Length: 382
Image 1: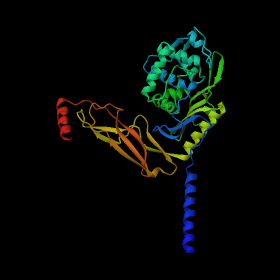
Image 2 (image 1 turned 90 degrees about the vertical axis):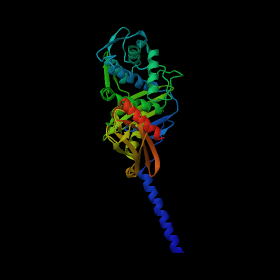
Image 3 (image 1 turned 60 degrees about the vertical axis):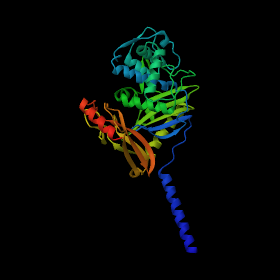
Image 4 (image 1 turned 60 degrees about the horizontal axis):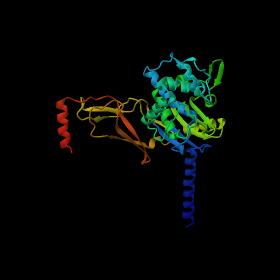
């Protein structure tokens, strides 16, 4: 009897030790001195850690991420050129807060305005760009809101191009992570060109980038700070280590130093406590799906425009399982990049996320005979 009790006690002790070891191997996400935060795996959009990610808060100058997104869009569409000049309005010149120190009537290069907005967080530069693209800031704000809706920023409302306080100007940490992800994904060259600049000099005035992490951690390459008295000190940051990119959003800290320290704490946890598993390369066919009434009978499915990377707790990669589900019937036309299926992930047989699978190619509508045959087949398959 004593022997059985002793062996049982040893077994319980061993299991407890194993649990402690596993807990040590997978540390809990940090608790930050901030109002709201989120950490995202860039390769999949997977949320690794968060606190109040959907609380609507003031974004302050993080607003300029959307101003930059629309500026880069205008450049791509040839509606604006880097060598173009913008005549500075009195409204832009009179903007308070952080400044590039441009003057009314000056003709300033678009590229200088971009640097003034990104590096110096210039409200004057942001308004000048908004007026150049939208005609006036109010019209530009409407463009910002339409783009936010397209990107899935469901809790965001922009009232201006700068982030100056307005009772209706609100967003969330989750929405800002969507915006920052889209900016890096859709404009990788522009992101690399501007967001890691540490200092910019204009009109004989040099100003440092307010993102302290550019000096504190070599893996950090952007992206934007923001602060007002009511919003606190905020930072959207991104780091790339060993080919893996993480993105953090930290809102409402108490100081400039705190937003950097808390952001770095969150990023470090993501790299130290989680393994990145690259399931599929960008453009790699995962499967082929049946297409009805199309010029081709199948379409290749996969992930675009980036590798599909999922994060798991350290040492748990071999426990991840993926199941592919096609959306049927899939009718032509099918356009490249269209969501045509779902990748369902499980970890230890528990649901671990669902991610859209995209068409890797376009399939046009088939001829009348193909459409007729497939219509009959679909009718009999009901």
